[in-house]
Image (cartoon, rainbow, N blue to C red):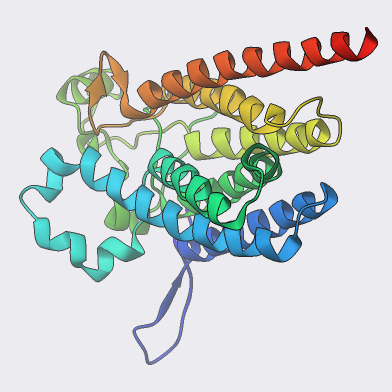
Length: 290
């Protein structure tokens, strides 16, 4: 909708809205994580250091999963693009960044001798608020768009967004021939403007509410790990549902989109772990009472 903030006259320098909001999302997430970690009695400076390692790992992970999911679609025939400037300036896949961040945090916290579950609890609200801001960047750029809709929620993107990301503006731009046929019959013309679900805003709004809920839970948690596990369960469910409205063309696994498949695994693992931790907590209370 607004892919470029400004361009310096007489130069080729352009400040992209997506990149700007991504940078803001990392800063806000890091500040919130460090504040909550300090409130929990952890070293604030170590939390900042950890956050920078997590940031680097999340960027690498998001790019890696992007290449994997789009290998057969684009990168197999254009492998040199992986080292191009456009590749590093583009976005990535959220779950790739999340998995990369988790793996890096396990290693770094072992080196720093920090309690993983307590620190992860402090990170959870930051991840959620970072996602909310980042999805606004996706909306501004026109990426991660939704499926066509005739509801009042539908939106039209700009020509500039179509040039940058390929977001459909007309029925003829839809990737799926079946969708093209259905919507051309519905609207009467292949060149008719098409409205799309603003799935970026759905996720931004959902993760903003999730941030508030996680902060509330952090201040009242009953056991270490409760906040990050709650994040895994709630975000996974939310993302799974939103994917039904998202026009993710990067392939399927067992009839589910890549993100739905990963969401399902995370929700199951987080739920099982939550139940185990909760039972341990209840058992410890009963022991103390005895």
